[in-house]
Amino acid sequence: VNQLKELIRRIDLPLHEHLQNHGVDYLQFSFRWMNNLLTREIPLPCTIRLWDTYLAESDGFATFQLYVCAAFLLHWRERLMLEKDF
Image 1 (spheres, rainbow, N blue to C red):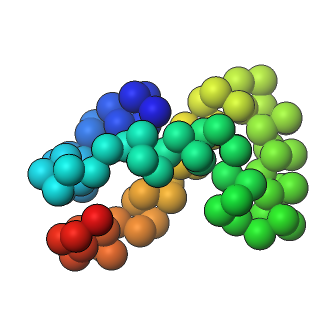
Image 2 (image 1 turned 180 degrees about the vertical axis):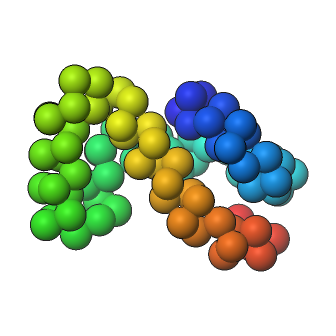
């Protein structure tokens, strides 16, 4: 969770600051992402493909998962930046 927070801070400081300024704790959303490996967030066919990549990559569960979660946040960036009440 802390690695995701640091990664977002490095690649998109305005998004990170927006989340921080509105009291969003990364633990609130990313713990479930990390703990369930996104199985509750995406459809089963996508989950199977994602897990295939996790298994194929030597450091997939640690590193690749981190970047997938960061990509989720960046994908929703515009919507998140407009949000004032989390």
